[in-house]
Length: 425
Image 1 (cartoon, rainbow, N blue to C red):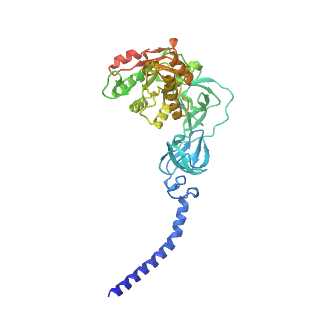
Image 2 (tube, rainbow, N blue to C red):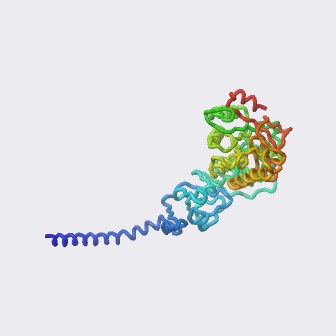
Image 3 (cartoon, one colour):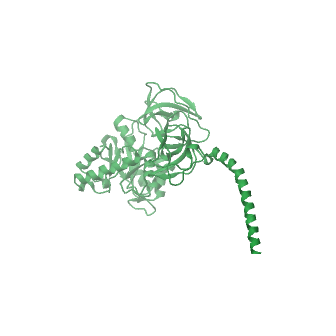
């Protein structure tokens, strides 16, 4: 009986094997055809041992994006050591085909483009909403009317909401009209030249020459930390919110040190009541500061030492949507250090900051408001263009020293009426 049972078992196993081979022979051609329709030839998987050739599939296709930087590399994998598949120019159309991946201190997006599939740095692309366009830019005139931006506005590569954002221009940025206006995506666009490059702005954000009167002062507000245990150096989030509402309702417009530099160097217009909203030391609460300012239509200025509790990506974004400034490596009393010590604190801090933001920081804030003649000279030699004190109130332009711009230290002990009295001009 045992032998017979074994023979019966072998027979059933043989039959199952034959059936399985028939099924496999029938299904394999169909599976191969299906795989060819969803897996690009350039993205053939080679296994986990080769991170520069991961599998990509257009079956995971998601949102539409475009290249927003002047140029970006499409790489075979999420690393700067992976091969360059193609060099993509600004406004190149992309489709995301998978999840974001971190590598080499960057966030990478797997994308499909006309030039192939691969990975691009997320900071170099922007999402394109459905239904918007990007019309090819026309030739610009040689010269035109000199005006300025009447409001904060995006400078785009072409006349459409689907075109890449080249830069964000603050209110009062000088621009030169370089051609006729163009309609697109429900807006009227004006071709302009600006200190941040050439491109298009919406016509409603343009102000002609002669429509501006110089303000008499700028209120540079200095905050440190935000939490509910408020005191001289700590402001509660609800207090900051009250102050932002008051500033908005009383006609104040936020500028950043870049705008101040443009005003001092080229006479670029500033809004009637300019205010710089600065927060020192780079504590984690700077994120709350940023979010509240954004909610009420303001931009922040962030004075950052090397120990800032912010990621490089966050610092980069802060500079894109506001401005970041140097604040030394370790926040010492600079006037108590010798030349070499001051040089290290100021120059190394700027090198660290410039490497993160990809450009030269324009501004510096003296820790504790402490400086001497050596401090100021090193700030100038380091390549900064303005520097901020720690107190002394409103800065009237008639008495401005660009290397010692006064600030208002905002205290958590103030009520709203005290705040209003201090910042009014």
